[in-house]
Amino acid sequence: MKKEYDLLLLSNQVCFPTYAVANKILRRYRPLLKKLGLTYTQYVTMMVLWEKGSVNEKDLVNALYLQANTLTDLLKNLKKKGYINIEKDEKDRRNIVISLTEEGRNLRDDAVCVPKTLAEERWLTEEEFFIFKKLLYKLLQGDWCK
Image 1 (cartoon, one colour):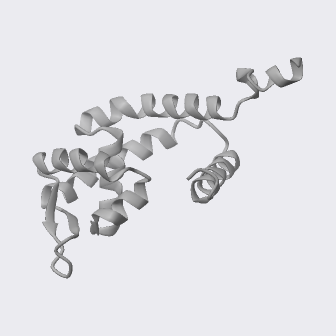
Image 2 (cartoon, one colour):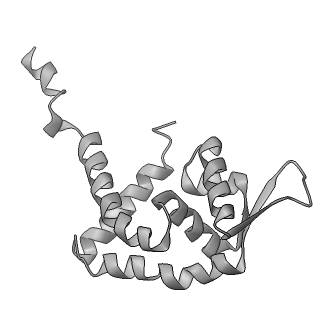
């Protein structure tokens, strides 16, 4: 019986350190993103747009592993800040296309300090970081959590 309860020990969980590390990382990002006037989710949304230029809503939801309803308010806020345009897709009016404004493109120049600052903080060796990131993406792409 005792062995069965060992399953409930916090130290035997994978979910807890994953959750705790994610929280620690997000706390480290907050002051850097505050200077940009962005939340973390807004920041990663902008990262997708800086990379792609424009995307439809479905592709953005998939890229960020978000629910569509979560994205709606986030996009409204980015539009209000003047960083993005939200328009109907010319090819299929049921779809929405999100693109950067000039101001949104220019924000990238200020945002580049975020990954640079965090890269200087060496939480892991370069090899550990590569392995950690590779494992995280492997988990993200798996079917285990649908």
